[in-house]
Length: 279
Image (cartoon, rainbow, N blue to C red):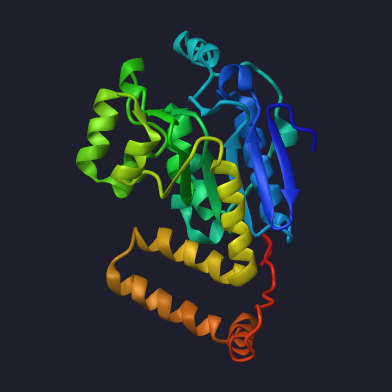
């Protein structure tokens, strides 16, 4: 697939999806959002890919929807009429349930780790999608804002669900109400970022993180743990425990368990099987 608004690269074991409208700080278009979804499905299906990195080309991550698109929407137009049929894709594990099939919640059902390497401006829908990824590696000078209230909008695209779970309700309401700008350093201090790195180092740090996972961890275990965390946030403790017990019993029967034990006993790196969407 030839993409126009993103760059998609795979270098075993990492897939990098780079938003590629640097002159607009990588503001989203309908095409870019469709291309991201299509590329995520491709990475999920690719057995060589253990983890996926989202980042931006140039000095921005993503400041949200392109203002021209927002201006069109404010006039009552639903889109630009561009035919994006060739980009239709269904990434994510439908078996996790309908909660993960609404708008951008599919990010949380992708069967592989998805890491945001936030290298610059991150606002609006860009921030909402960043909160849907599994980890956020943030550069110190990156600038954030929810932006919605200053556009006459509400907390959109699931950020009212993700943000309080990451940083607490008080911090979430502060950022949503005020739409104030804050830096990567504050993002780390309030829990929005899992890693804080020097400027220019978010992508290489995210890639190295996935390489380390691929060298030492079972990809199937990563997949199941991700499903456990997001599913169990919506479940009663007893139901979560019962599902965990069932999934644990299944893991004890897999070759990964035997390989994990043998590699430890034999004092060698493990050789775990890779996974793809069909697994």
